Length: 248
Image (cartoon, rainbow, N blue to C red; front, side, top):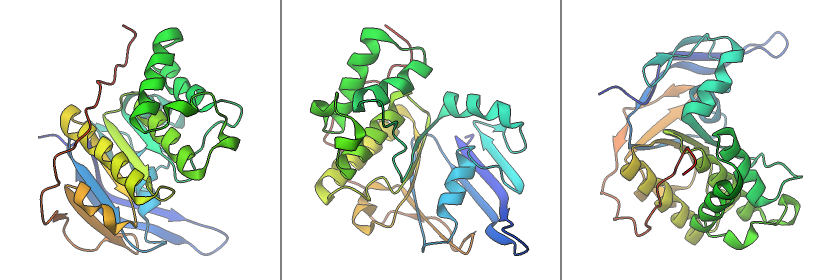
């Protein structure tokens, strides 16, 4: 089976001044459709850099990055936005919400990029905000949201475009354990029912029951073979509405 996203022998070197920093050192990782992979490791180990390379936000210094079988490493910068738009939803650790748009409008912006506008966009945005538990915050601006609420808006926005690959950097960091579990139940249900490949960077060991595979990274390297979760996750309790990508 072709992996949804795969990196092979990927390196990433930063060069601040004269001292080169080797953030990734020959990383191999493939994630299948419908699989939830947790990426764990100490601070500075290369987790966020790897996620950014997989999401076509950073180009690797060397190595291969394939999205649905297409090689994207080395593509001209002007071609990468279309790759991200067509395949990838990204949840950033810093939220990256537009401060002049309400919670609902931030979600609608992602739908607009997919050609969904007007009533359809508003209805879908409200549905997504309901799925993450903050439908009532539709008209509220980011400055008036808590950190956890901003995170949930960011997750709703990432899901809005119906991506086939979801990459999330510490998506539960600003959430209490109850809300974090609800969000990961949502993400896992989406992965398993709709074939979305999910990679989550996390330090939160409380959430390990929601992963299909655990990958450890240290000093820019995968330090041991991926581990299968020791026990199968409990069945999700949420019913997830289909994520439409065209108006109807």
